[in-house]
Length: 325
Ligand code: SF4
Image 1 (cartoon, rainbow, N blue to C red):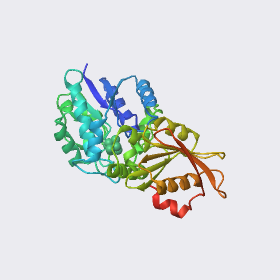
Image 2 (image 1 turned 90 degrees about the vertical axis):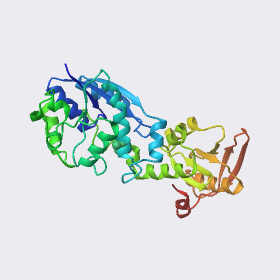
Image 3 (image 1 turned 180 degrees about the horizontal axis):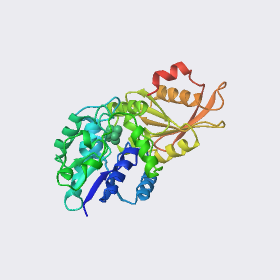
Image 4 (image 1 turned 180 degrees about the vertical axis):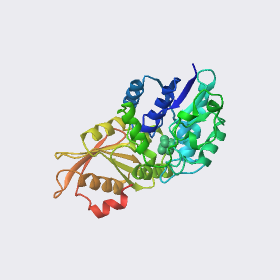
């Protein structure tokens, strides 16, 4: 039996794509790509969504190679720091490896005209050319609006049973979920942090001033971030869960700030702090403590384990904004 490889995010379109091909009596193997910018709580759910469809799921983690395209994408960024064209090319190049014996072609839930950067005819052509997959990528949701592909020409799939969905409306997709009784899928908003304006701002700051280690990227997902100088950054937890996460991610050469006697956030200082930068950091931390009217004692642990203390008044909201990333 012919087998297709589905690029599978667990989103509405990828679920319906796999289902459409299963309905034609073909086998489907799903592959889910995890990038350093994927929403961290999606993995288990994707497995469950694939299991609900009765298809095997493989997971591929993209690391340094992915960070390199975010730093300098050949085809540029979308609205935020999302390098969608380069990202898709990289994923398809990875998917191509499955064609060596495991599957005969690739399917994806891309819909013509749904996303401005990567889902129009020229983008589809470019992605196919750059990944060396011309004719081997079938987009079942929009297939009737696109050129014939190898699986259609060869009769592995029946083009007549494929769809002609176009644009951003999900009306037809929702109708199909009702028809097939599908309820487990991610909402279309997606799980890529690079499309988030606030995260993108933090990532731009990281690219400009710091190294793009995985630890530094993971820190961007937590807390409030403040650029105190080109060489110093402060990250402040927003709740107990984030305080614990920050404590786990603190590195030996970071400074760890903690309020004494009142409830308040943990702060992680990255870079070289002199006295004036320590003063800025403790004022920001004091702003997020429960007590805002009085000076608060805040300790900081230096990389050499030495602990020092200082009293600080909360910084004004207006001044804080000068440092917020
Ligand atoms: S939204 Fe993110 S994961 Fe999706 S194509 Fe764009 S960069 Fe890649």
